[in-house]
Image 1: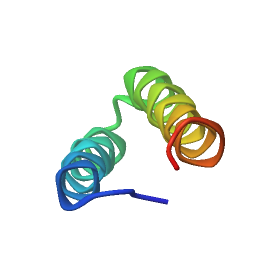
Image 2: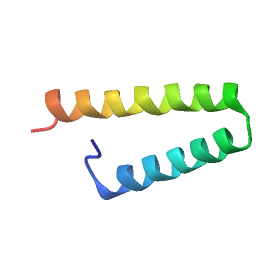
Image 3: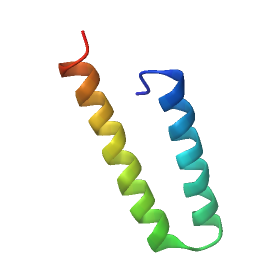
Image 4: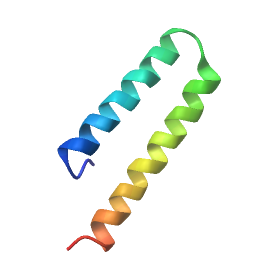
Length: 53
C-alpha cells in the first residue's frame, strides 16, 4: 500500500534485503526486519486513511 513512488521504492529495497537475509539463513534478523516492514506499512496505511485528504 505505497502512497508514493518513494515509499514504493523504499519497501522494495527493504524486502529485497529481507529476501537476502532469508537466503543466507539469517532468520532471526529477517524476522525482525519483516516485523519492522509490516509495522511501517501499517503506519503508512493509517496515515493515508486518517490524516491525508
